[in-house]
Image (cartoon, rainbow, N blue to C red; front, side, top):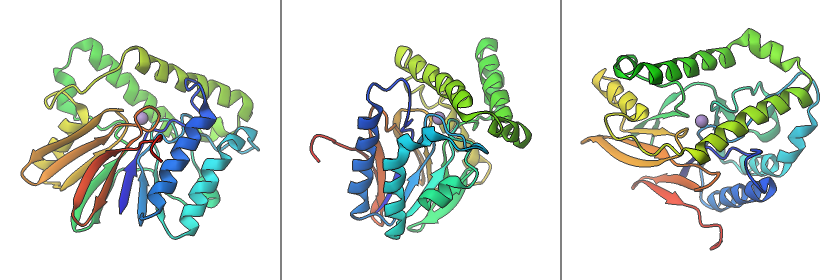
Length: 264
Ligand SMILES: [Mn+2]
């Protein structure tokens, strides 16, 4: 079985009991490990992540999770870690520590004879769609894209890694906490086929002739499983901080699932 999950936001200051949250994610991964050949973590697994040039004692809190990843990769399960928009700044430490394969860009891969497009999903907007939106929304999207460029800039990344971890982490975790709280206050449900950015993105790829049988994204914290055409489908994975949803795939097909922590 191949598993896909995203958006755990481990370490979020908006979560009441971060250790219990981490344990649920670990239990979920251990359940998957029973028959997994590969696990795809599609971004925002950490609410904030930066590998500094200095020792960072805050990473200690993730020891149980990182040890679980290490145990699974040692067992021969491929774990693919896609960076999200909250855990961009990994520079080799995660690979070394947990044995995961880090992906910094969307990937196009073939699994079980199907062509898959995998990405966290941030920053994937079709440009002509933005122009149709009200000015206020345009401004919001453009500032997100600008910030994304800043966060992905190697020079600024280098400078941020020079900061004292305790100080920089406080800044990062507070920024991330605000976006979680905003989401709790104003949840953004599925916008519909003609407005949901990732659906529009996938449709555009199909129109451009960049065909994929399946598009899988995280980022939106909504569950979506939608046919785009007879032979193309999009899935948005929900999240693993409140819903604990995921997708599982074998030769027969792919399905959205929800992990039931009580049952296990
Ligand atoms: Mn995200």
